[in-house]
Amino acid sequence: MLKDEGLQYDYNLDYKEVLYLVPVGDMHIGSPECNHKYLKYWSDVISRIKAPKRVYLMGDLIEMGTKKLANSSFQQCMRPGKQIKFAKKLLKPFAEDIVFGAIGNHEERLIKDYDFDIMEGIADDLGIPWGYQYKDSFMVNGEKKIIYLQHGAGSTKWHYTAESKHIRDTQHVNADILFQGHNHRCGAFRIPHMVANFNRNGIDMDIKPIWYCMTGGFLKYGGYAKAKQLPPLPESFIHIKINENHRIIPEPFYIDERVPELLEPLGVHSV
Image (spheres, rainbow, N blue to C red):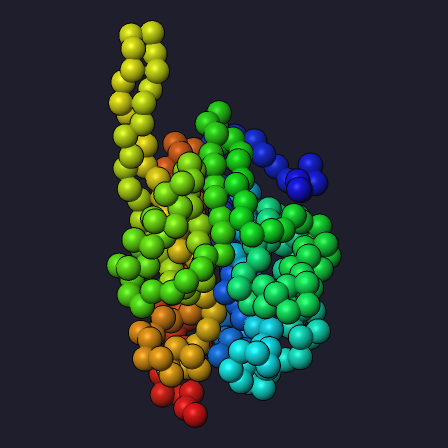
């Protein structure tokens, strides 16, 4: 399913100009741990970007608790309909720049129980395609870029195991940048790969870097993370900038660095 042709696919960047790639997900709107003030901060940051941008929804936009999963339906602080309305209102100003909406495990809960695809309704309202994974392609100064995204699945407790899991999960995918959410971690790293370059003299081996990006989350420390003694992951999101020379520039936004006044003490959420 393709997005409307209004989305730009060919970027000609001059000196010091950049294209912004903006993945965002794991908002968990409706969870008592969702930091709605940091969501507002994210919206303000995106609104201030005047350069061209491509926005990717990484899944778990809403909490959508169910009675089949512990006490999640009793803990959520918004009814399901209000969660959906909140997500639409938050994302509507950026609709023309949103490339795709990924289904997360929280949206998938109602697909499993009722064959009800919440992301379909959100995507239709925003006028974007949606699904479980997506490969986006566009041109920057005459060079093709390929972006792959999925929400992610499974769990891992530590950062170094999250990085290795990201690599394993996408080892079958050929792309320049691989976005993954789900684990609420934030950051990007690159691994150089040797690739064949065919020319009139035969085959040369070139270096091609592949970037792996974990796209952050908006949950305060508490609830499930605290109950399972998981390490604290301060709220975060990330931008990836591509400049005129095709340089990849990650820019993470950690709440404790950017707006520490919005970070609640770890002991606040107690049962």
